[in-house]
Amino acid sequence: MNLDKTRHLPVVTSSPHVRSTDSVRSIMLDVLISLLPALLVGVFTFGPRALVLTVISVGSCLFFEWGFSRLVHKKNPIGDLSAAVTGVLLAFNLPVAVPLWMPVVGALFAIVIVKQLYGGIGKNIFNPALAARVFLFLAWSSAMTTWTLPRAVLPWFANVADAVTGATPMAILKEGSTSGLDLMAMLTGQTGGCIGETSALALLAGGVYLLIRRVITPRIPVAYLGTVALLSLLFPKTGSGLDWMLYELLGGGLMLGAIFMATDYTTSPSTIRGQWIFGVGCGVITIVIRYFGAYNEGVSFAILLMNAFVWMIDMAAKPRRYGLRRFARLREKFGAKHAGEREAQK
Amino acid sequence: MASKKYMRQFVSGIIDNNPTFVQLLGMCPTLATSTSLENAVGMGLAATAVLAASNVVISLLRKFIPQKIRIAAYVVIIASFVTVIDLLMQAYLPELSKSLGLYIPLIVVNCIILARAEAFASKNSVLPSFVDGLSMGVGFTLALSAISIVREILGNGTLYGISLFGSGFQPAAIMIMAPGGFLTLGLIIALVQKLRQRAEGKERRKS
Image 1 (cartoon, helix red, strand yellow):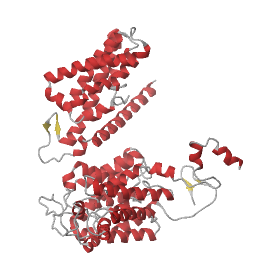
Image 2 (cartoon, chains in turn orange, purple; image 1 turned 90 degrees about the horizontal axis):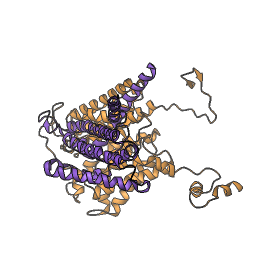
Image 3 (cartoon, one colour; image 1 turned 90 degrees about the vertical axis):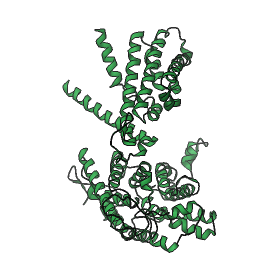
Image 4 (cartoon, chains in turn orange, brown; image 1 turned 180 degrees about the horizontal axis):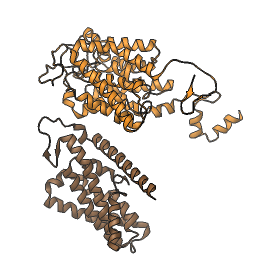
């Protein structure tokens, strides 16, 4: 039974009464499970250092979540596992050769500044893991763009002194070339890139799991990936549109972003039409940055930019109330002075 | 007696009415020139000089300036002092003048100075106006220095140009970029508000 904890009374609400066993914890647990395949591929591709970074990132996210709540006398929220998800996603957004203190700084920024200072879970405007990634990227851009080759032997804990680096697929695509790219390697994650972003197949498997468990709806990923696919099909930089489209879809952090970051409940629209708009917006900005921007990859900036518009999108995409004409509210506001009255007379 | 009153007014301008952290005035120069302590102190002192001088002159002329064109009149007065300061800095502190660039001429439209002219100097006599200008200027300088200390240490690993940590320290470049300015400013404002609330709570309990 639903109990009001402060007064020890049952909560009485009006119908409909829908029962559900979902909780924040169960949903976050599902997300963690869905991230496992990508983690396994990441560790397989980049070695045990990838696992060390992930563990540090998750640990420090949980620590800062606990520590901040203690500092401001709030209930300890780490049992809901949302900080653990943030930790995994943050680690997935790091290159494997970064020094080990970097995920700690990222976790501090993600949890304390982006999440808790805005009020904690459900109240943050920006996706914490992505904002932290961008913070680290702008703060230490050379470490954040040092891409080691897959299977390079790296120390578990020590700083990486001289990494054997290679061009990522995104760098090659930025040049307007596709030479040296291998679709099979990009599907299975055997390319340079961040720990969790390289294998499209593992990420898609996680996405299918989330869809089956109904944790996410397909709207945002389909809109996002569809927009990127359409734009890259229509405007290939080289060769045939179809090839170019596949490379653009499988390269960089697109799959990770579209499936796991853009679908974050707190920072994406809750209206159905709004989710379509959000996805398309992410896709357009991603392609614009990839084609014309200074950076090779635009997924994190695209999602963060669209995060800022979520409130507006939700306002614009409010479903029509039963019995009202289309755009009744807008009509009331602009132009038609007596639209509201006319509605009432009908 | 009188000196005690001025002292209290001076301290209140620095703490309770700090132009940057409490009145949230002059955000543009605050964010732009707090990248290093040297810039911050230079900017703060230049603004203080203009503030004190323009407050005095505006206070002297407050009965002659017609209501309807007072803002234009204030701007003319402020602009003359800014020109003086700008030329002095170009002559004697060319390095600092170069690194502050446009932000020295922009003191003309600094809203701290206009706000104090409008809210204080145009209604008060010369000596309180001078104290007000001085205290606002010092408050602005201290606020800029506080922000710039955080930003310079984290973003450059130095303080007043002196290296603090040796070569092993990797500075976070974002802190001397615009986002670092906003982050530092926001966090310090939050801290100041918290301290003010605590102090107010204590006073209430006392009385």
